[in-house]
Amino acid sequence: MALLTITTPRGSVTQIKNGNGAVTARLQWDPAFGARHTQSFLRTQAFIDSEVLRLMSPYTPIQTSMLIKSATLGTVIGSGKINQIAPYAAWQYYRTDTTRKYDPRRGAYWFERMKADHRTYILKGAAEKAGAKYNE
Image (cartoon, rainbow, N blue to C red; front, side, top):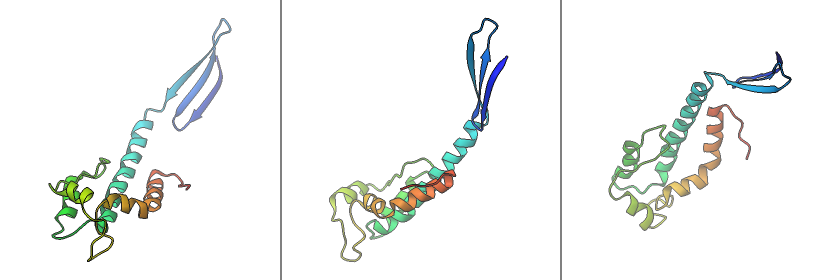
């Protein structure tokens, strides 16, 4: 005999009274819950990855634009990892000046500087993709 059933989009909890007076609870997950939320997560991660690549570009040192292209070629959108595959990327990132004469935005630590400038935009967009509300 079920005393109480609570149903949510994630599943249900049922409280059951046994014949000897003991009460047990049974948790039953919605079988579609994992797939539904996995798709939401992947969509959100793809948004973050593509926006990081796009927003990082104006901060990246440029001579032949290969450093920017190496990030695009080395990154699998949705993986959560931005890979710059140019052999000199680490040297440029850690060991050069933070600004350039030709463009003061371009220089070392380009991801960190982009993140400082665009953090709120990325978080708001990710929250929208996930169907949530962003609260700063």
